[in-house]
Amino acid sequence: MTVLAGKIIDELSKILPVKDGMVALHEPRFAGNELKYVSDCVTSGWVSSVGAYVDRFEEELAKYTGAARAISTVNGTAALHLCLYAAGVRAGDEVLIPNLTFVATANAVAYLGAIPHLIDAETEHLGIDIPKLDEYLSKIDRSRIKAIVPMHTFGHPVDMDALNALAKKYGIIVVEDAAESLGSTYKGKHAGTLGWVGATSFNGNKTITTGGGGAIITNDAEAGKKLKHISTTARVIENFEFTHDELGFNYRMPNINAALGVAQLESMPAYIEKKRKLAAVYEKLFANIEGAKFVKEPSFAKSNYWLNAILLENPAERAEVLSRTNAANIMTRPIWRLMSELPMYKDCPKMNLENSYYLAGRVINIPSSPFLAETN
Ligand SMILES: *Cc1c(COP(=O)(O)O)cnc(C)c1O
Image (cartoon, rainbow, N blue to C red; front, side):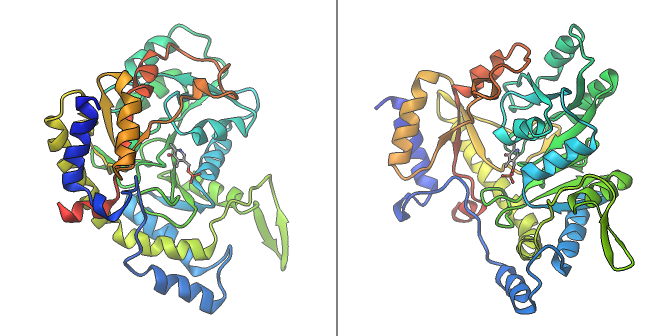
C-alpha cells in the first residue's frame, strides 16, 4: 500500500462509523415530518399532479432561497430542459456548458437539438475558468451561442458577478445548474437565483430529496409564470374544457413527492449546518495529509458542501486510493467522466480543456451525509 492510501484510511476511520458497514457518499434521512405529510397525501387521495403540497413546497422553496418564484418538476434534468427551452434555445443553437459536470447538463441541451459547447474548469473550486473563457470567446465565432450554464460543482458557487458580466458582454443568457448547490450562497444570495433562471434537483443523493424531483427558481416573476405554464402542458381551462395554448411539457412534481419535499425543507438549515461542520472537520484532517488537498469553498461564497472532494497530487495514486478506501468501508468515487470523453459529446465544439483533464484524473469524492457530523 502506498503511504497516501493508508494515511487517508487511518484518518477517515477515526471520524467515520466504518465499523457499522459501508459509509455511503450521501444518504437521505427522514427524521422530521416526512411520514406525516406523505401519509396525509395517501389518506386524502391527493397523490398526483395537483395538490396542496405542491403549492406549499413551491412557496417554501421560494421563501428559503429568496426567489420570486419556484416551480417544482419531476427531476432536475427536466427543470434544466425547461429553463433552456424558455431561454429560447432551439435546434442548432450552442450552449456553453462545463466539460466537468454531470451528464444531465449536456443532455438538457441535446434534448433541444442544440449543441453543448464545452468549456474548461478552474482547479481551485472546480467551477468555470472565467478569464480563460473570456479570452476564448473573444476569438471565436459566437453567432450560434445562445446561453451559458454555470454549474456550482459539489455546492461551491461560481463567481457569478464575473460570469454575469461576461454573459452580458457577449449577449448570452445565464441558466444556472444549481442541482448540487441548493442552500449555497454567493455574496449572501442563493445559488440558482443569480442568473436569469436556475434549476435544482431533489434526487435521492442530493442535500434534500423528494424521492425524485427538481425545481426552477427565479427572480423574474414573468419567466416564473411562463415556466409554470409550460411545465403543466401549457394548460388553460375555458368553460370546464382543457385547452393548451402552446407546446407544453408534463414535468410537474407529483403531490406525494412535494409532501416529502416540504418536510425535508424544514430540515434544510440544520442539514447545511451539519454539512459545513463535517467539511470543516475534513479540511483540518486533510491539512495534515501530504498528497491530497481538500477542495474548499471560494472566499466569496458559502458552500452547502453537498459532496466533499479531495484533489490528489499524483493521479497515479487514484486507483489505489479508490480501491483501498472502498474496501475499508469508506465509499469514495472518482469525479464524473468528462463530457468530452462521452461518445455522444466527444465531437462537440470545445475550448482548450486541460484543467478539466487535470481534475478528472485527481478528484475523488468522500462521504458527505449531514449526520456524519453528529459524531464529530
Ligand atoms: C443531480 C444533477 C442534475 C440532475 O438532477 P436529476 O434530478 O437527477 O435529474 C443536473 N446537473 C447536475 C450537475 C447534477 O449533479
